[in-house]
Image (cartoon, rainbow, N blue to C red; front, side):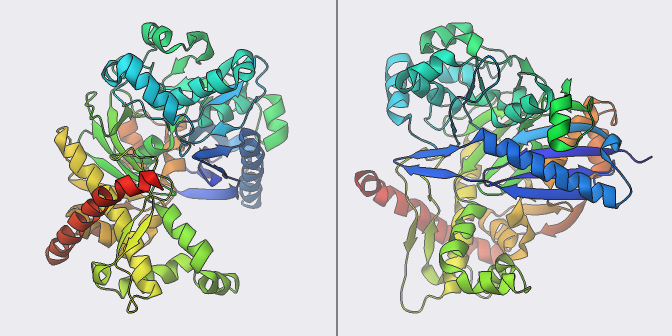
Amino acid sequence: MSKFLMGIDIGTSACKVAAFDLEGRVVAQASEPYHVHHLGQGWVEQDPLEWWEKVCRAVQSVLAALKSQGAGAAQISAIGVDGQSWSAIPVDVEGNVLHNTPNWMDSRASSIAERVKSEIGNDRIAAVSGNSFEPTYSTPKILWFKEYRPEIFRRTDKFLQSNSYAVYRLTGEITQDLSQGYGLHVFNINTGAYDYQLCDELGIPPEKLPPVYPCHQVVGTVTSQAAAETGLSPGTPVVAGGLDAACGTLGAGVIAPGETQEQGGQAGGMSICIDRALAHPKLILGFHVVPGLWLLQGGTVGGGGTLKWFKEQLGEYETEMEKQGGRTAFEVFSELAGAVKPGADGLVFLPYMAGERSPLWDVHAKGVFFGLSYDKTKAHLIRAIMEGCAYALLHNLETAEEAGAAAQVLNAVGGSANSEVWTQIKADVTGKVFQVPSSDTATTLGAAILAGVGVGVYRSFQEAVARTIRIKRTHQPDAANHQIYRRYYQLYRELYQQLKELMRKY
């Protein structure tokens, strides 16, 4: 009887569930969208109860697909869960969610973050956590609950991350995985343990933080209640799981120092694998899901979400054609962008559609098209969006080099990696070689690999990657295009510098 591994991804706009065979091939997969509540003034929330509802539906769909192939839930050897970063889900002692969680785009705690940096010092905090005290991280959000929702804070037994909440619903166990620890500034980035002295200085009771587990450790099994809600078999092992970007890095085959993952999902970014806690004040440092390794990360707002926004607002025709059974809107967008010259004839896009994360850390940053004129077309706009996201990636890569972490070859994952045009743009802008693994489900695959290692299906992470990861495309940078992009990249950088005070003012 065949064995399968399941990966569950708590993404920003949807949950994705996939069952893989032991060679990393997708056997069945499903996706269920959910809401992102943009409430204004930097408030962006999501409902963990809706997450769980959609996880149940997606798992049921995957199990139905397995059944149609003559397989079933009993053949799932283990489950791994990954999730978006920087949640702060308050649950009471019975596991009830007390409030929607601010998500990774939420900056409501900006004033708290500034006050803490002034009173305690960003250097003091970074010495423990390896990260700057920015409002979008989990820690300032916890302090926001304490200051502005004191009754909820008092009733909160634990603050959970996105994947740890799903793990709780599956197993009844309260956990915090190692790779998501970086969102909590009281988490020591060298030791992987909480710093109780800093907890005291920040006013965060350590008992409100879950116990920390290695990402591949089995932390529980599917309960009878979760089995009834999902269709999974009771007793199926569940591992702690990890950060979506870190699982995507594993699913891209990046498990050795110097290897790099490029993420093109809703958000953009990169993760450089390193063997020591090498921090940079403008980047993000966290544990890899692979033991003994860290990831120096750049996380940008500009990713597939920018093109999704364009589709929703200006892609009515392409969307209608897609509904009628034609090519997807994104395939058409890629074709249109490919017909425009590198540099988009001088049209430059700043992809700061919800402020910007690294390396700017500016909650006031705004999206901008610069260089519009009557000769510009929809194709120019699309190309400029793709190039703007590539410029944001390059900005992070250059910042990482300042810390001594230089990427050579980037393994691209996420929806944007399906676009050969967009991937080539990134190669040309950065001057780096890009590889695209054969599976575009790298994040759920990474979660599934964690589960496989956790229950001994794979003897090591090296064996798992060797068995499951295959490269289907390679993009070499075009030297002439790279020179063109160097000029426009400088313009991209200068535009923000010239506009940032106006962005803050308005």
